[in-house]
Length: 166
Image (cartoon, rainbow, N blue to C red):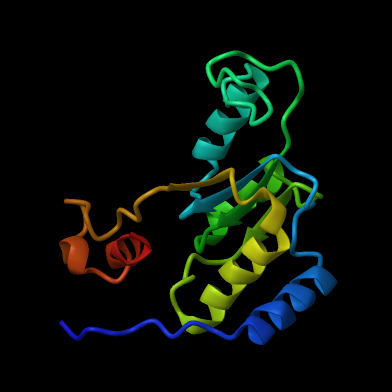
C-alpha cells in the first residue's frame, strides 16, 4: 500500500474557501454552542440522537462549574452532514432542511485536498466555538457486508474511506 502525505493548504487558501462557502450559504450560523460533523451521515440517526440529548440537557454547559449539572439554556448546534448516497441525502433534506444550523455536503471526501480545505474553512468560520466540536461517523458498510460478493473488507473503496477519516 502506497503511503500518501497530506499537504495542508495555506491560510490564504482557507480564508478564500471560507468566503466562497459563505457566499454559497454553505456555512451554518457562527452563533452556536456546538459544531457537529456528521460523517457518512446516512439518514441522520446520530444527529437525531444528539438533538434528543440536547432537549434533555444532556450536554455539558461550558458556563457551568459542574459539568454533570443540567443547564436551563437551550444550546444551539451547527451540524454539517456529509453523505454521498442520494437516497440518504433525500432523507436528510426532509428531516434536516438547510437553514442557519443545518448544512449538507454531497460526500465525505474531506481528506482530498479540495475537501480538506472545506473542513478547515468550516472550522475557521467557527473559530470561537472550537471548544465544542463533535464528530460522529457511520461506517460505509457496503464492502464489509457478507451480501456483497466482492467482500473487500477494510481495503474496499467505501469502507476504506472510514479508515481515512480515522
